[in-house]
Image (cartoon, rainbow, N blue to C red; front, side):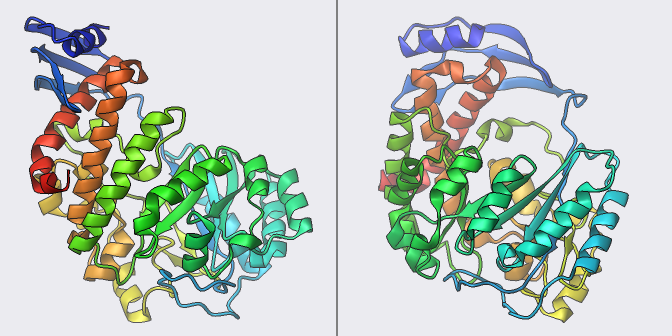
Length: 433
């Protein structure tokens, strides 16, 4: 409550005397010196934190997330796809059964649930196999909660499929890949927009949202595409991902384009505050204020998300597959000690970048780009800094109108992060504003 009071007084330009306060939350104990706070044109200025003590008892156990590639085949040819598709490669039921048995025999001790992901290619091309695997998995007693998931392009759903998925929607979730308006989606994804029954996904999994991938074509249409997806009824957009492969996201022309799109999206989400900002603009920047960063991988590659190819061979994750890498590259990759987190930490980023805790990266994509896991794709640095600057702008403006959106602890650290992000990155992009 003290922080909300100080914030409101700051907005009214009233001076709050310096004081020392102990703030307690579920996992954090903060001793802070609270100096006068001001709000000026979206820039929130607060004092620095004196010290932070973190308790880990309440940290949630991870979800075990294996995936089965049921087919290499895909009926589309998306402009940003980096995979090589083989129309004949598919998983048989006996292979799938042995994988399911292995999964439940090897659930990590600290996992609180299992999420089995079916991928491809286009996984719904193997609908009968999905049904058989589901029924087999459910036929045995399991000692841990589990469910199933598949991301689909939505174009091959038949009436029979819809009926089955509707009947099993509580335990089998379908996610939709949708890049935005008809024009953008058709350009990126093989003229497939009108083949998708969008209402089917909204009715069955209204909170699931969609996965959106940004190509060079869709970038200047980003705001329109996001608005369109929300206008369909999707409250969230689970992923707005920069396309992998031969895209140089450091190109200045992309910065020019993205600034205008992000400005429009910030204004849109401020005017529609019941919507959850798309994944790109929904980063928890308060994490940047952690005084001691944990040296760990960004994801569960090699430990928490095994990938099983159509022949049953296991790979470190769904990105590391024969559809993406040569056998020579895969041989080198699987020799990695995936339990050694240091092999996945870019020391330059870890030690020198304030937004490291919220800057997304993919270990597999880093290997695709740099032939190693440690070095992040630095061509994305500027664009990630720019995105985070707009994240800070959006959160500052939301706090100004409704500081109750955060608990006191998160509010304090978010304000501090806003201040530092603006100080660090605004000068680099000032010419755009």
